[in-house]
Image (cartoon, rainbow, N blue to C red; front, top):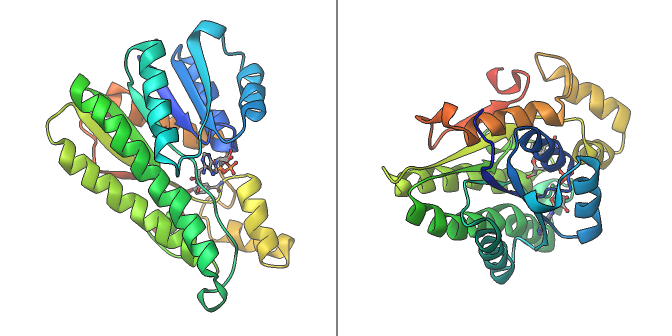
Length: 254
Ligand SMILES: NC(=O)c1ccc[n+]([C@@H]2O[C@H](COP(=O)([O-])OP(=O)(O)OC[C@H]3O[C@@H](n4cnc5c(N)ncnc54)[C@H](O)[C@@H]3O)[C@@H](O)[C@H]2O)c1
């Protein structure tokens, strides 16, 4: 992939997709800036994937707070001198409720993390990348960013917005050497899916229904998402920008 010594920022790095992707980047010899809400969980990730002291930075940040995001970007540049990739991945699913029962707090919370968080990452990473004349940003959307899901109105709205932001950012980067893309995972074997299954009141039945909607008849693994992120991060995707890649076992082909 030619990612050796590339500087990669990953938000939501303590989560299952962030951790799996961090491991894949580490195996390629990249330098990692891992970002999440809690330092202990970041330390666990760093030690479990065997990161070496000089090749990584662990930073706590709330992606909805502009000063936190600015701090991440400036600390990354201070330590490594540049930013090659931002995996703009932190996200929450919120509560599983039909729109008529969705509280304004849940709507605001989900939009804040999933949309404002992605926006702030774009804004501050792009300022550095546009000056450098190179960089790749990968935003985590979802199959819910293209289709819809009952009981997940706030999440669906937020992930549609991520695709809109991705396209806008790609246009604004023009021929700068900076590319911006999104990924749309479907059901990945994860805490997030457990939470959605439990939200239905019958987790076992829900899992069967979710799996039956996927032509490949199984949940994806976080590494299968990570491999697509590495492709979009690397120069192998040099003519790809403003795109969204489905990582969904065929779910959106139906
Ligand atoms: N798991 C799936 O099936 C699935 C499917 C489609 C899309 N996604 C998306 O993939 C991304 C990662 O999901 P995951 O399954 O790894 O979930 P996860 O809950 O395991 O990880 C998400 C991480 O984001 C962090 N986070 C949450 N709010 C934050 C904030 N305000 N600031 C900084 N960090 C914050 C959490 O602490 C957590 O470590 C999310 O954007 C999610 O919407 C997941």
